[in-house]
Image (spheres, helix red, strand yellow):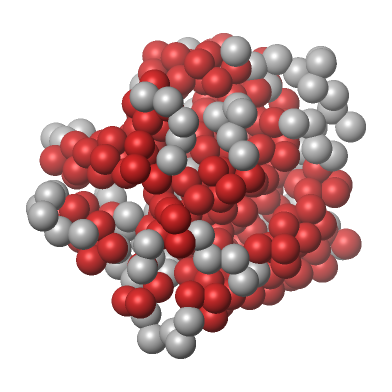
Length: 340
């Protein structure tokens, strides 16, 4: 087990890992594994592109990170302190000329609606969408030190709900932030899936009304508890499948065959976790395995990199990779803030 005393700069490591996974997986997204191998050679030797551009995954992670920093500069992290900067950062990203990296339809639709300040954010949320666009960006909430469990869960679900309002998107974002937090605290990777299943069971009927308001009423569910339980149940099902897969690991097999393609929230979480848990002590192998996958490879590698970096720290990433990642300065600055 890695101890917290021997691993340095875990927040920086997680953010750099997320962006490196994104940049490695961005050119392979939408390709099947034979096509990736034909283009990149053996997957264990995949190299970072010379110009290491990231996708909307890293851009939105940074938007969330900036919103968190703004909210906490004003004091305690509460729904009212986070909501405005989060909404503003997401709309700024939506308007930005750099928002040209194949952004997801749900994020674009929701941000277009969020731009109208008179509109309740709950009316902008895409209640039927559980795309992976919410949990690929949630890692910063797991990296911020000093949050209570309620603050972390509420903030993770709120940042999801602004765009992806489906209960499975909320639960998967919460689980992703919790996984990052556990790894920052030095959790044993071998115990991680069990810890996440316990967390999901403990929270299965907990609707964070203080953070989500009446979001659930936009669904067809008879109660808030029924609404959120649907999301946790889908996440529990995929964690169960992941546990079974890890009993007989197959590192050379496309991770999407076991975990799903990763376009939807619970599958992206499972695929990212699988890539990390196959190689917990080989961070670059984690990224390469995730990038050489048949599904949403940049988002899967994003999540896998966030987990690997949270566990191994900033020194996990060779400088010749870390130094050429797009947005490196901002990633390192945010990481340093949360590593103190």
